[in-house]
Length: 480
Figure (cartoon, rainbow, N blue to C red):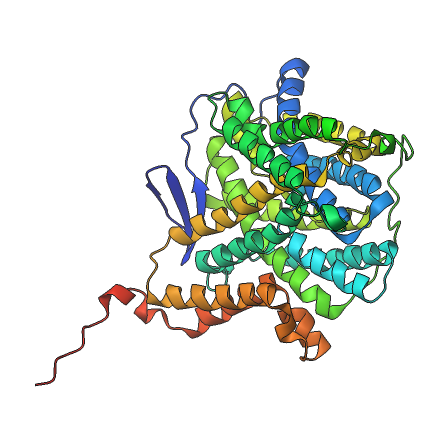
């Protein structure tokens, strides 16, 4: 495995695979990976990590709950997302046996699964399923699916032929683009808004949130940049109050304290719906590799050799196990968060012992569903403004990965066909209605279809034409 750096981007190679990470010289760390900060600085650093990540932890649950009509269960689901995030962060930082990276790496609910989870939820809902049936199916699929990542963790360094930057970039881009519809629906008022859908006030509120996020992001203060999404939500929320869009009577309607109950909604399984979920676990393993590599660079740790590979395998293994714990305790798959890499840079604190404080605070927050009900007060257009930006940045992350490679003729056709098929089933969902049910469930999911297409085409189209770009096509020879 070799490493080469260009400008501020560092690429790590495994054979033909190349994982992109942001390159930052380690600089001077106040507390290194194995240092033990005093409680005061440790708690302060932990709070900053939580502030940078809490919106990312709870937002997938808000989106899924709103889109699938899970109603009264959403506060509990949010509480469980915080609880499991704490448990998962402890496992990732502590490294229990072979499980965990041993880095200061915060875990939280993954955005990557939103598309496939919503597809499964809508399928169950279309059959007349109740919210309990929907959640039982989702958690059953995710529990079985985590085995995929657990197995992959032990072979991640041998998958360069299948999991290339082209495949990963295509899938991540399609994930972001396919979710934009969900974000923009909330932007306009949300599912079930009726006649108020698309009302000018909704669009104005969403626009204010987007403008606030942009303004805050480009300020000089690092903490403001990290908290841009939260600041946008707060500003949008405050602006919406005078327009009567916040129903405070709904706050605290549920129990003040709730204990985690394993398999509260039961579990169910459907093979057709499982394929899309399983495929995202493959992509999540690659994303986790990138996050942990970036974390290693920022923390001044090696990014080559047996220790580095041990951390990568342990981190991905923890990712899979933590997603299994999430399914057991009624929340959605977990993954490493990249937000905390920025906090490490800002604070100069890379100590994994800070992760124990983060974990304890998140677990404590998870015992109080009232925190989840507070997030439900956010009007849909405000939430839509934030998620629109978040989903758009997911697509941009995929494009950045694609841009790390030369866009030759081979990759042009892999990307064109994969994007065309993946976005095609999103824009024209009725195109697959006459296919057998099992086949339709598999290929009607844009993420699965585009990912499978990219993998198959990458294996089928020979690499001998890698440098034969469209611009280098020979000109037609004039007839003599």
